[in-house]
Length: 322
Image 1 (cartoon, rainbow, N blue to C red):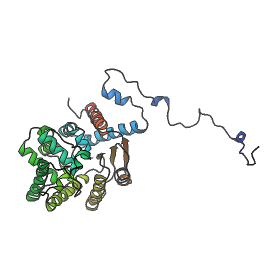
Image 2 (image 1 turned 45 degrees about the vertical axis):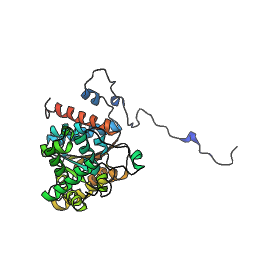
Image 3 (image 1 turned 90 degrees about the horizontal axis):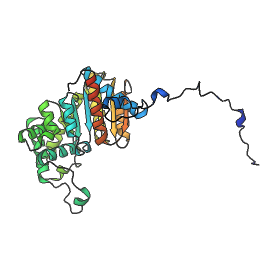
Image 4 (image 1 turned 180 degrees about the vertical axis):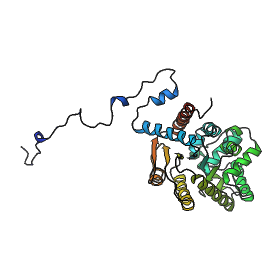
């Protein structure tokens, strides 16, 4: 027999599962997917728990925002573009679902390469060995010329790039988020961190021009953020450091100038959950009103699914035409 005292389990007070509060009940069961079923029915059939509940929530909030003429802003890392999602993003702009897009410098690079050359994303490990990584001259010329244009004409970086792509009209211009946004008068802002982009290692890179263009984009983005109160939505796909930090600063600038900006909704979609999106997008900004949700998954699956679900919801409300 043990020399240590054991608790007497016979003295517990049982409760009935019939009267106990439970988190999941039978009316929350998933519907079985059927061959040929409509996407709207599939979404409706997802169990209203955890991530699927959060997913449905943000779909509703995006549709609510557009119904009430509030902005939906997209902040995204470059991986979203290089996984082939440009056409989906352009479609959302065409249908009036997105009112602004913020990217890092690499986003501008991948968009430009796809528009001009129909391909992007080099083998970093292979080309790093002999110093050829990031040495594509045409890419550097396009981006650095756009920065120079932005400074000369006092444009934002994204606006200048959109203008350049539009005027050059390369073979795959239909795939360019920047060119299509420029055509649709939707701001795309580029938030550059000097030294992080391959175009910075070329002699044509002008720090004055890049900094001036990106600084102007920060001010443009801050103005966009000032409109999100009372129902706007901010979506983050794949930027785990730069854009969450930019958003936090843009929000404080907007609040400092315009006053209270609360009761908006944020969502972070990424393959891994990170500190900055959680704190600087989902938590701190909505502490006085609103809500943030995090959904984990691959962009090439989650972004088209979100876009399709939003369009179905807006169609059901008469906000979208077939």
